Image (tube, rainbow, N blue to C red):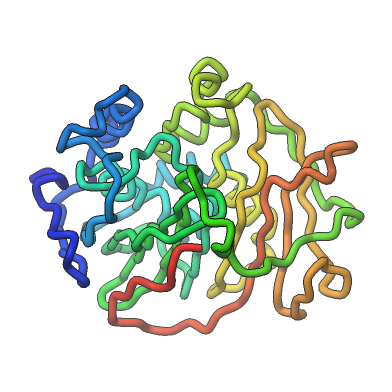
Length: 332
């Protein structure tokens, strides 16, 4: 059964659950996601991008177990130390086919190509073993106003049994006529520009293709300058989720078992590139933070130090068991 055949009445307030028997294949989904780029194609009923409300639909996939070889390849590209537990960003990779299936459904108001990933928050309630069986749940929130267009969240849960062990919220922006009075999100702590870098990273020109190979995210803006230029970029750009993963790998020794990590994606990183990674002293952060919080940034080097590519914060959370599936919050 295709996802398109299982969409639901948009007037429903509770999402209709669609149980999948296997992960959606990314190749046909990616092809369908590109169709809205053809003038007039969004008028077709099976093509996303026709406007309107986001469908009240939740995709569910049980029995998901990470492939150890795939985890090892991902860890190598992102800089994680290989362990018997999943990197904290890896459940996002496992859920990515469901994200694409949801956004590429014919009832979805926006096409996947052209969406801007502006924020991501992950909460890990405990470390997940590589061999653990996960149940994934993915749904989107209603569209919200934004100063630069319209935004929405894709909310993901990874359960072990009845316990939600990991969850995330990805916020996407559809550029267009915005609402100047709309909020662009809460105040976010940043690392002061004069803070010394703790690391410098050299990003090769093929980083987008390397990350695509381990994550499945083959958005053309990341693959090559030839595919990025028609979409408005002078060169291929690094994946935002690679940048987040690489930052968490750099912080690995400081991360507790249970924590939340919230990031804002700022200026894209044009590949190849050299960037700096820095963390803030709570006493000199641009916005006040507490002593348990880790604030970090990925920024340009030298004269480009004022160019922030990613701002992030890590906060410890209490490990807890949650048995109710809830879509949290509104799009920022």
